[in-house]
Every structure is written in C-alpha cells, then in structure tokens.
Length: 148
Image (tube, rainbow, N blue to C red):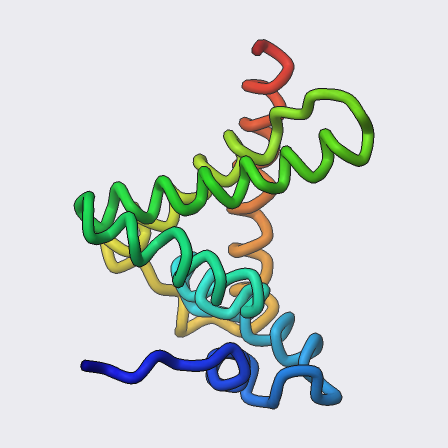
C-alpha cells in the first residue's frame, strides 16, 4: 500500500520550500504564473487548498468516474465552496465561482489533451497566457451569472 503524502511534503513539493517558510507565497506565484501550461498552473496554485481537494474530492471521484469527469467535478466543487463562502460573508446568494472554475476545468482538460505548452516562451509571456485564460473564463462566468 502506497504511503500517503503529508500536507507539509505536498506543499514543499509544489513550492520548493516548507509549509509556512519564508518565500512560500512568492514561490507559489512564480511557479504557478510562470507555468508552461494551464494544467501546470493549477499544479502549483494554492497547494494547501489543492492538497485537500486532491485527497477529499478528486481521489474519491476518480474511483467513480473517468479522470476527466473527476477533474471537472473537482473544479466545480472548489467553485461551489468559494461561492458558499462568499454567500455566507455577504448573506446574498452568489453563483460566480462555480461556473468560473468549471470553465477553467475545460481549459485545463483541453490544453492537457492537446499537449499545449508554452515552455519556450519567457516567464512574462507564460504569466500573461495563464492570467489571460483565467480572465477569459471569469468574463464568461460573469455573463453566465448575470443571465442566471
């Protein structure tokens, strides 16, 4: 039986520094924004949240569904949890993060399926591409939210 990786090991693997160490946030930003694909952006983004999503949502879903469905559902669950948090803070029903994250899951799956990589580009160009994909999905999600 394979050993389960700890949160500390997971974060160190993703950030290159220990959990809570100096430079953890800057390493996450450098690695995620400068990732050579949108799939890798999410590999590095918010490793603490990613750890729990992978263990508590993705892994169980991947036993029930094809991996691509599990990925989409994991992004949707993450979005729904973000919507729930905003709803509780504002005391107003929010439905933005679920469609936003769901759209991003489609980009993750498509770019991974087609092997789209921008590793040959400068870090700034990679960051621009990753941020642009996030922004495009956000704009589309806002349109969905406005028409719901």
